Image 1 (cartoon, rainbow, N blue to C red):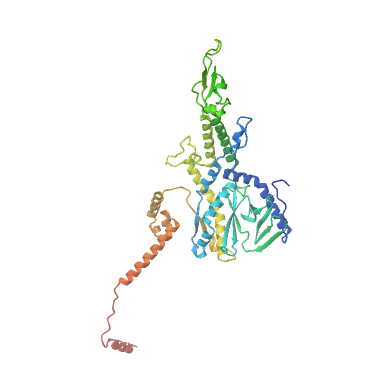
Image 2 (cartoon, rainbow, N blue to C red):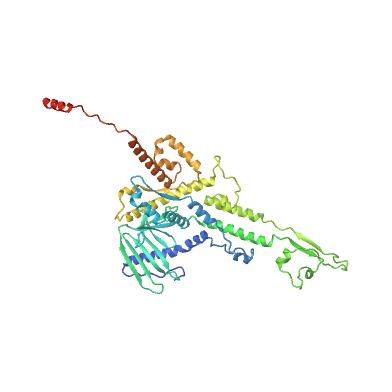
Length: 492
């Protein structure tokens, strides 16, 4: 067994097919782990450049552990433009289903962002629905990444056939706790760190496989998508790190002027008061005020000491190459070059004043949220069904949809101006929640505004009713009622 392989698992109380499935999925995790871990290291800034060249750069510079945060920038800047603001339901009231409780209890605003980042790093991330235990919320949504979780995606149904999540491992990376999600069953298994006996719990449920795959850039042949930290991105960052390492060496070795002396004794000039040779850095940083020479030197020798200097080399070539690396990286990831801390060499602004790189990033963000939306919709619908103790998701909930924040950054005044133009074309929208959203109000502000409008209308109606005078009906004259009754009797 190699260092990347785990021991086979044999769980008691479940069939051989389930055990074979678990071991197959564990093998897939082990197979994918090196690349997944490498991409996580690029994102976390834990990947330093490897030694390169044959003696070109002193080995001490590889011990500096120089890193760049460009890969994290490529992920984070896109992730910050893919913000899940909530959900909408055109056919009903989400709050009547306990939606706000599910959102708040699961911190789903932050959890959805976390899932997006994990998906961008590895390709897939996973949303898992579970029921809460005692003293926990009734409906839970967990996020798992591709380092600990994998499954089989059905190409016909576009859903997961199964999912294995390894919750804990020992020092040798053998599983200590795992959960297998199957169609209508959840198998939970744990064992002690020093023991070999597994404790297994097999529970049925009505939710099929209660998990969704959140996939970045899915395509035919790669159903689990691709990582934002691609091989090209990693190669470009490594190239920039090599330039950065050479630049560090240049700063130490070539930024000081090179001097040479003629006609002087180094033992007198480059030694301290005790006659010990000066350290190199002291000799280079020192300032020579006077040099002892030999005035009685023969004619064939220099009578006076002479100091000459080589001009120090400029770091400009390294800086220009680093800038080119930044431009190449920005082009690959659709980032503005300025986001990498480098001034753009060319003007990327378009005729309308917008930035071309930003437009490409916005298009990438819109495509990303389109790919993620089905998983978020199904996961929330399942969570609401669990919250309401239902055995299936009602057909009426099919219109529950995700609501994403616009990926383009616009000022409040620009949003309000665009909203006013749309409301001018359709004035009745101004009286609806949609109209207030067009003006740039947040969901909370929209609800506050509609609630205050309702209270104001109710108060106005009460004021009108209390202010209206009561009209008195005049009493009939004496005898009028008897005459009318007699006339009615004779007519019948």
